[in-house]
Image (cartoon, rainbow, N blue to C red; front, side, top):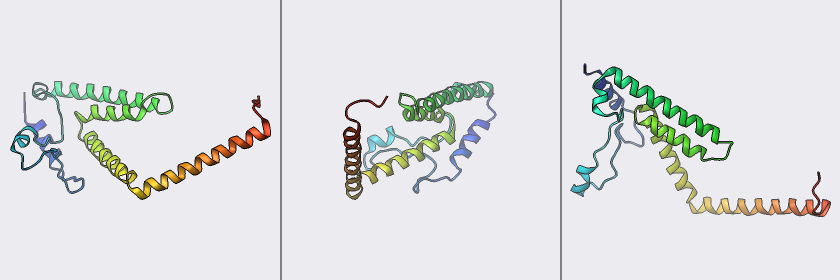
Length: 163
């Protein structure tokens, strides 16, 4: 039973007009516009559900699918948050959870795009020669201070542990 609400909601999500760096709300394919072979292979993917068509056709089945994706995605994010102070790849697991949520929810897709944009900008700033030089100077100063603190401790207490 398809009453067209799912498609209409998907079109509304695509036409919200939210832009990132002048781009439209659809994802842009990483292809060379002059190359006709990659143009057909990499169409821009609109925001919205990535559920199979047979699931989208039935509203109860699609709602169940979305609830399942939400439960799994949030469980992965909670596991990532737990891993932040504990050993484990906390941030990577959090982004994996967002990617799972992004298969169904526009807000998660936009959060991932925003995060990717911020990480790319931070990486470009970190590769700037001035920033790299400053970071290296700060690292050397920090290592000298740590070395001085260890030397001061060894002079005062020797190799014996204080407990």
